[in-house]
Image (tube, rainbow, N blue to C red; front, side, top):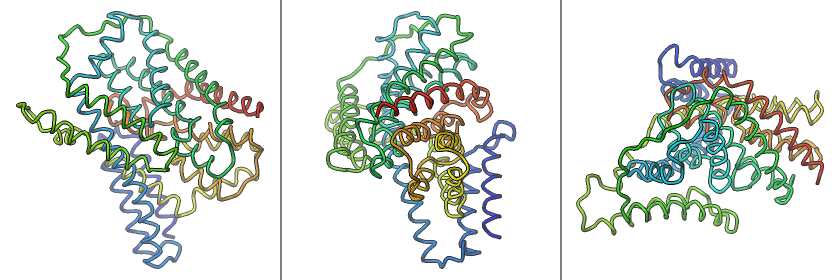
Length: 415
């Protein structure tokens, strides 16, 4: 009975996210409320008959995943908040982009930028930086939504071929289902899918973008030093993770601590308006609380056995169709436990089919705005972006995802 009650509460929570712009209740409040309530009920009416010690272990595992993501996001957002406040990102955009360019050309440039950035950094950092660039341009609502939609899809597509770019890709690689050189085959279809979506979204973008000609803020040596430290932290995160298995969170927190000490050293003889550590307060904590609530809900879904039911698709559908459907499901359910459930089921597939599955779970979350970290961050940073407004782009996203999936399956045939 408690399983049914928890599942009902989870459904209600996701419905409230969908109708957020109708009921005007912040999604961070509803997800945190229902996420914690589900786990409290699991203790009061013991879930699956488990004793308190077992429930503690399940909850602690879920909390560990949340804390890891929460702290990583906090560190990355602090870097971006500082660089944004100092006008460094806007200055870089002004110097790289021409004074005037077409909206269509700008859309393709932003999509390519987000794709490449997510290939060399994590999805969270890539999303934050790409959004900062777009939000600095002052686009009207309808056009802004197109740019944000492309950023979400491009960010999810960029890291899918690298074990450091997407968690599910790393999980599939560590399980021995696919090799690194085979994963590289995903780069081409992923990039083409992003360009296809950019082409579809560019319909109706016939205007010109005039970059604001406000005076640029002076760039100080301290700001340049911190920007270089940010890039160094991203590179170090990738290298240390690949060669020494250092958790990305640890490297990024080290980078954040280094940022605080470096700024303290460089600013010791200067009068500053705000201490460097105070830029943590510039973070939108709605984003972080929303993450906590969503992951608590997903964790509850995992414990009541909802995720295990998804693997039954492979009993009724051929792997090609089941993989495609799993990608779509990852838009509503976190792709990490979904991938874990499939790997534990020990389903037998050819390398070509595993490669298609890797693309599906990495990019399929783009179908819904709540289906990926990039979408959740974008929804919290861009007030015009809601579940329903993103859903209106659904047909374009479905076409791009389907094209990329077919391309991934074709690429797998080269193995």
